[in-house]
Picture 1 (spheres, helix red, strand yellow):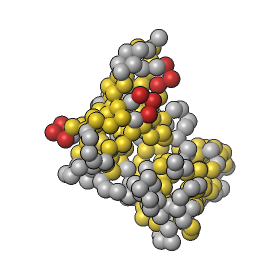
Picture 2 (tube, rainbow over the protein chains, first blue to last red):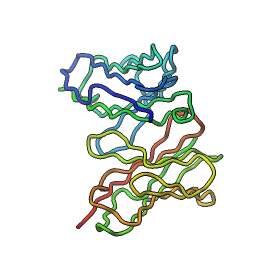
Picture 3 (tube, rainbow over the protein chains, first blue to last red):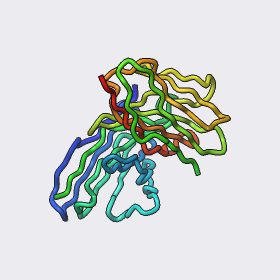
Picture 4 (spheres, chains in turn red, yellow):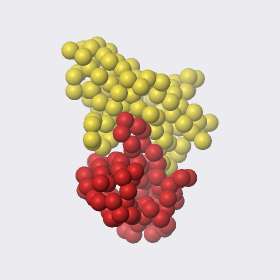
Length: 118
Length: 113
């Protein structure tokens, strides 16, 4: 079945530095990637949607200059948290949509990245 | 815009007992509906999904869910709960193929022995 690999699983960084999170579709071409954020004990909130080769569409309230999303290829999307601060600490999860019947609905999720900013 | 409500924040069930987790959605047309399970610190695992057709959907790990249009519900059920089922369960809705999912707030399931 469709697999989405997300890396790293966890990362600790110092305040003010930038962190890049990768999301790869391993066995299909991801035409669309979705990025979610999850606070402890809370639900997943959609941050942005990115289509391959296009600029990402951010949800209201999400700072596009802080959360840089790149979807340069059909198998890779990256989320870069720039100038990270402790309030950016969270669990980030991606999901990918492909073209075939199984993946066309974009509902295969990565395993998530736990970001801790100290 | 679509929305999802999971009325129960936390449910405790005895091992071997039956389980029903509630999910209500708001959407004008027939939505795409999903149930996911998440263990602490882990990603999401898809339990089952409904797109169309038979309103009773079978999933993995012995779970099933029934789509009831008249009640705007998509409740998750399992006849006999195992201790390993303890986790967070999320109901999600998609407006159409390829759009992002909207998630409910989740229900924490605890299993007592």
